[in-house]
Image 1 (cartoon, rainbow, N blue to C red):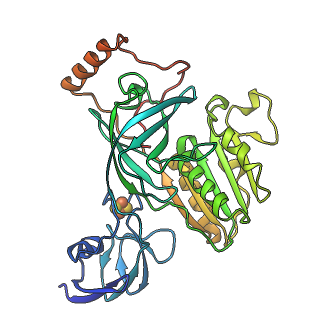
Image 2: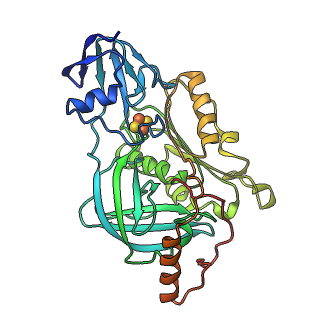
Image 3: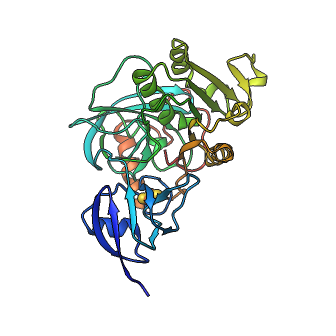
Length: 357
Ligand code: FES
């Protein structure tokens, strides 16, 4: 039988019933706990339990729970970090560039300024297409305006969205950004070493965290490990060169085909995990990219009790376009005088389902 308990969230108290989902109970009271997927996946709803008992929603970090999965079992005292509010921003595509044969840099300018923490992500909806999640990253050189977001997007063969970038989705295409979401964002620290690990376009949120740290706390040690399957996809090199200017920052780039090229101290063969140094309990560890990599880094961090934040990229299932969508795309291509298999120059490799981010 459920009973009445008192829950305090960020010092705002309210009555709840045992068994209630914490997120639902908070939202019912008008307490805007940030959330997105409601499925324990995105980490946007992470809260810290200071006192009391929750059932479910626990994470590898003691005291850290997914509010969307946690059932209230007793009186509780809970906190969460205040984040920029989730909202919608309308914008247009203002630039598309090749970062690598299979990766595009896409810039979107919005009507109003964007507010997100470095490492968070948006749900990006190009007009006429389903939404996909991408993390904005700072440009490799210079700074961008507050109403411009730069995304690193892998072109995925068979995807419903990314193969159309640069052809049907061209400059001026209308976009809606919803967000920001995600909990793997930069937290100005207490001098603790940052260990940042990325695979593929997981480099976008990791670079956002790295750039924020270099800007605000250049004296803090930072190690960035970036990986790509192929040397040709290692688009992170310009950013890694920028890290070289900071004496407290170091980086490793790893590619699985590095053996076939000239291996060096900087570009090493293997995956980022192969080059992860022993972690320390005091480290702040971030990982983004393939779930396999993120899980492996999470385990290493948990072994020593290091603080860990993750942004796993889960692929959207491949879907057949509706007949209406197919017709719309074909007509749009015909209007632009393009063939039905749009490609940007240099595209050579694709995966088989649309990337989530
Ligand atoms: S809203 Fe709880 S994990 Fe996404």
